[in-house]
Structure formats: structure tokens, C-alpha cells
View 1 (cartoon, helix red, strand yellow):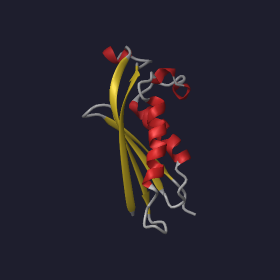
View 2 (tube, helix red, strand yellow):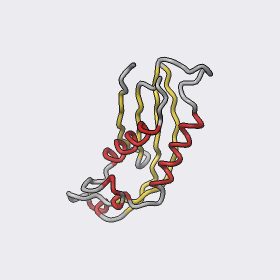
View 3 (cartoon, helix red, strand yellow):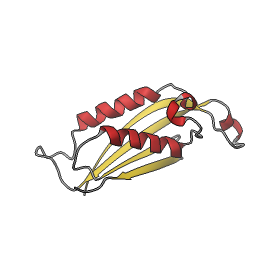
Length: 128
């Protein structure tokens, strides 16, 4: 199985809802690191799992959408606590919808919110 990884970092703001999490209940910023991992068994005719330039384009578009924004204000977080678990799922789904390479069998987003805490969401794609 081949694996390709690409990462980006960005700062976004949020505040947690629905519980007592101290300072996290108030607007605060996180320096996020988004790691995207793609897996597949087959390479394309050029020897690539996927065109990394295309992947970076989609990743940059999504990062730009969230960069310096308040996550709570985004429609995809409506009625959701903007946790790194929810955020990693939202990012994974958005990237999976954009990255169309037929040989990609798995897409995983690992989202770090600081040097010691991360959450991940994995999407397994059906084989043809």
C-alpha cells in the first residue's frame, strides 16, 4: 500500500460549547497543523499515487477558508461543539469530495491543535 502525506498549518479561532472547559469556553486561537494522508494500492501511469500539485491546491483552498476565522461562525459547525474531533471529520469529508483520484482507497486527516493534542478522521473508499 502506498501512502502520500501533505501538511499545512494555519491559525483559527473557536470557543467550546455545552460544558465547562475553563478558558476554552471563551474565544481563543489555535495553531492547527493539518496532516492529510492518502493511501492506495495502484500508482497512475506517471508513477504517482495522486498528483500532489492537485492535492495541494485543494488543501490550500480549504485552509484558506478556515484561516483566521471563527469556527463557531461557519455553517458546518452549526449546533456542533467545534472540537478537533468534529473539525477533523469536516476537513476529511471536504477533502474527500474534492480529491477524485480513483486509486485512492483511504483518506485520513490528522488535525493537531497544539504540540501534544490531535484528532483524526479516516474515510475508507470502496474498491471498484
